[in-house]
View 1: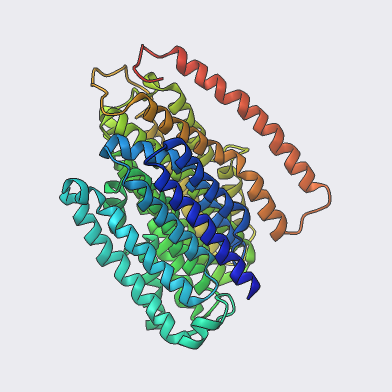
View 2: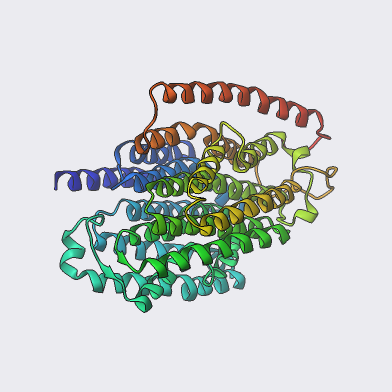
Length: 500
């Protein structure tokens, strides 16, 4: 009970600081945003999850909150000429943190519903401020094909658990009998809807591409993880293994390949990123299915690391697309190709994030992909399923190189356009760009946290941890040399751009 009171009080205090920061914004942007950052750092330091996965999602959410603080303020002011967006973004992020920290089923469902409601308004935000009908269509599609199926799944679980257990039992101590195949299929499809896994995936590209970029960061980097987290919690209940495993692996693998293929065909920056998100959640669903089949805890560790890597990567990429949108006023890759001429720093940040995502050490992307590959590989002799899963993962990685290269075309390849760059003040542009650079650094810094997760979940030979940390430190120093050199090369190639 004392621990329950403690985490509630910590969240309440942090929330008050963040909300107070939004009030202060109207008087002082600097002090208001700093106050909000302190609130997110407080959550990071003093709010512990119910287990390692929960704690990792809370940490990723808090770090994203820090990255987005100045970014959202500058984005809202530049695109909407107001600062009405930051409070809604903060409420959305806090509600997700509460979902990941929920200790009982009733808390989990309550905060889940709150998060969905705020997400609906964020997807429809452009309709509310400028009557953009595409935003309203996307929000209605989200309501029908994501909210309703997920809510149905949650209320079925609530009915099976019973109100007494829902209010009194810890969420990890629940033992719900969901062995009925039909009921189990409905529940899994409900969580698939939130994670954008086939067949309920098609709401995501529209929703994530029309929402304001700070909202897209949270929708794509974190909210889809709610569906994966729910599948993880579901796997500990009494379920039909064949049904669960088959749905998660087959539909997850299909989504991974389909999403990657669709991403490589897009020329709108945000739609490309949205489809790549469906591909990533497909991989996470596939890994969850392998865990259900094998009960090897290594697959849970793989999900944790992969979720962390995707959250960090996708947060930066949507921030970058938003930066391009408000400074150049287009998201069409065919009309771009000269961002490096305008801002070598922004292109350097993008390269840092993409290289991390593709798996270059010492980034979180490298560690996550390495661990996923090795975990699947050690089971290759058990069943052909693991071999097929490995093939899907390899194919997805190959195609991801293609769509990341396509995205990079927005930054590199063309001479400076004669397009007019208006609507973003110098101060706001610097805030956007600095926030993006900070977010790209997390791909490398956060590997220290990831190593601590590994150390706590696997048996490590004496001296190996010290060797790993020393290796990471050396590779970080190499990176700190490499990326400034890339920036210098890009800077020398500028043709007098209006941005720097």
